[in-house]
Length: 118
Image 1 (cartoon, rainbow, N blue to C red):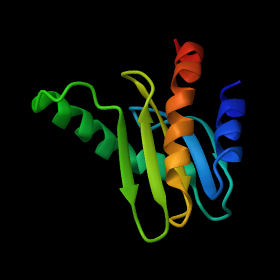
Image 2 (image 1 turned 45 degrees about the vertical axis):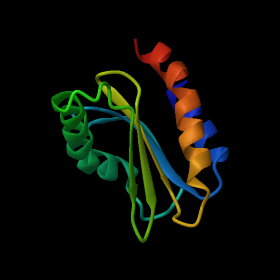
Image 3 (image 1 turned 90 degrees about the vertical axis):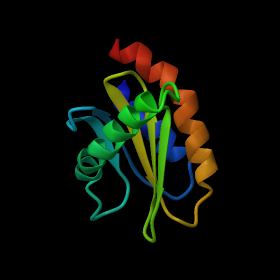
């Protein structure tokens, strides 16, 4: 069921490269790779530290809960969205895609994933 949710996200976002559901320990729960040569689970594991640091930063600055991190690079736009205190979604899209649609798809999927994880 979790994989079906990821497939739905990447099918609804033109330019998707891959998606992964990760724990904050960096371990992938389920992944969908769309671009050959992109290891989305390694990408997610490497970005887990950044995500955790962003959570801590928001807490330290008393900004409240951290919901989303976006990284824009030459090769991809990386969208990370918190699901619970222990899990997050990562979606990689091509830099010329409309990544706002990716943000929307992640946001609307959070509750469905949360119910399946808790």
